[in-house]
Length: 64
Ligand SMILES: [Zn+2]
Image 1: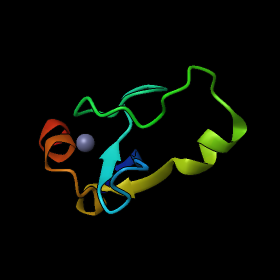
Image 2: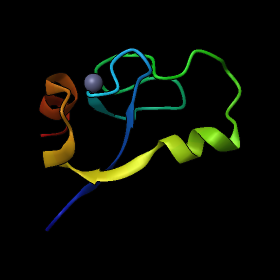
Image 3: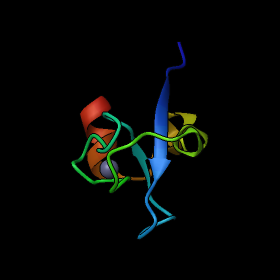
Image 4: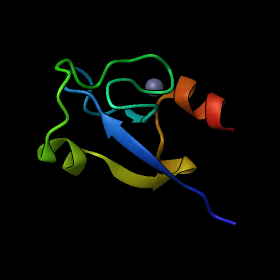
């Protein structure tokens, strides 16, 4: 069975893909959004990907 996770990249490191934990943070504790309001554009940043597409080793180890 293939699992898909909500993922996001941060502005600082666009090459590293994280797993979304909540509306501000990734699984590894990285903040992907600094402001508190959740806008429509924020949803567009989140992409559903397979575990093999997640390049943050911390996020990957948490969901594995
Ligand atoms: Zn991460």
